[in-house]
Image 1 (cartoon, rainbow, N blue to C red):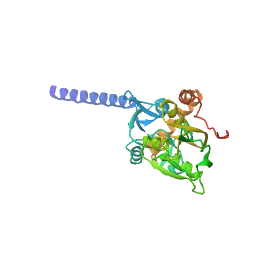
Image 2 (image 1 turned 180 degrees about the horizontal axis):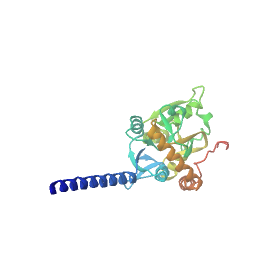
Image 3 (image 1 turned 45 degrees about the horizontal axis):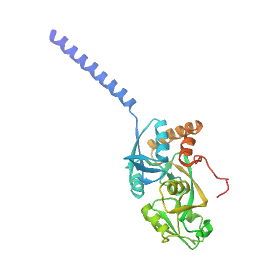
Image 4 (image 1 turned 30 degrees about the horizontal axis):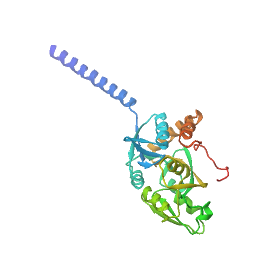
Length: 268
């Protein structure tokens, strides 16, 4: 009889221990934040750049603020642009920062709401005064970064195919080629070019003209899980717009608010 009582007590103890363990696991899992892996380049100032082994930049600041506000943790994956695109397409990373939301890209990815608006700028050599607008690029050779959307926007505004576009897999060769005249101009985000020319001593200048505004959001693979993440990020962005956080980050980097559309303003 005593053996039966001891056996029953042992079974009860094991049951209570298992329940306590499951409860602890449930509690711990509910406290655990999901991680969003975000791709970034190491040399795309002012959006991304490395300083003292730390990733910094406008897109870094604004992405971290949105993701943390949404209740997720962030893990950065730093690589060249073409490598990041491949990682996004294969699911090795969850999303990219500084990625324009276009109809073509929407075929592959679902996007969050827009967190900033990019306009195409034109960079030329410091002694080049012949290019003052998009019209002046006709018959010229223009450099574009591989994987960038700005070359596509340029061609959208070149219906008669009068502008030659050359794509390069790195910014250094682009800056050198434009500075020495091998390429007549370079197209990229105007705000980025202005910041790079000002802060990085690049021998180019940005003309007083811009075009082709595009919304920029976070792209995700088309899954149910990602659909929920997108909803969470959109809610966080709404709150950060309302309290002025996104505007503050933008003005810190660009001295203007690029988180709202400039469409309707006269192009420079």
